[in-house]
Length: 390
Image (cartoon, rainbow, N blue to C red; front, side, top):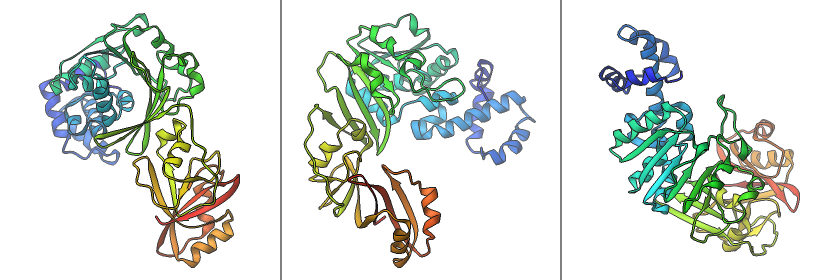
């Protein structure tokens, strides 16, 4: 259901607020939706009941990004999906320490409110009146001093100390947009802004080749949070910085690793005692060789992001598993190895192979109570399987 201005008027009325509070304690599942709506329609119109149920569900879905505050905020489904990870919002706001921020394509205000919470005078712009109305309600609900207005940012933006730009990367029907000039509005808009600092939020899978016109004077960060690659940040600032950087946010701590354009040589070697997977931000920032060298590791293949070490590394930048065995890839041989050890459940990871878990696992015919991690990858171009403790 799409929330309209009439719905929002009801949801912010005394009756709407009371209904949303009541729905916090209801079963909001699809299985119970018809029963719940039938009961609510004895007291409210169908439109009012449907809008309240939609907002209650969005608030429930928003807990991961907004914590306990989600219960008093307003969302559209698309704006919630676009809202930044909370730890990244906080990191970005504290890192820039801007005194004034223009949040371009602000949506329901998540980033603008993070900047305001960090002490900046934040002003959000969006072409969608509904999102702007919700952003204003959200600022009021959190007691934050941020302002918002409906504006077509293609016509220009107030250029504060920092302009933060989060263009839409999905079409109106939900399809992902891959070309940066098809973003809504297009990425090239940012090149005209003359603010001291400009930061653009991009898809973490952005094709770096599409950023050629930003090569001079701009830098690119790939940002992960707790092991998941979340976004890329393209930025221009008066300060000097690396052209490419990995950022890892783990809880309240942020780690950075600069790509300075030179990389150590790392030898190829058969799997050693520990299999290591670099953080995805490192992989996208082209720093696999650097982290492998820093951990005294060796690569399996020049094109594969795994490396192995003799001793377990102590680094926030890598996940590790103890290697139990490895072998040239053969379903028959792998099946026999797991059968002898009573392995009944496997988790399959893969890099550099066309074999998928859905195809492999049924062919292994597993029986037993033991668990293992099976990694399908390449060693010097040849397919191998690595069996690790789970």
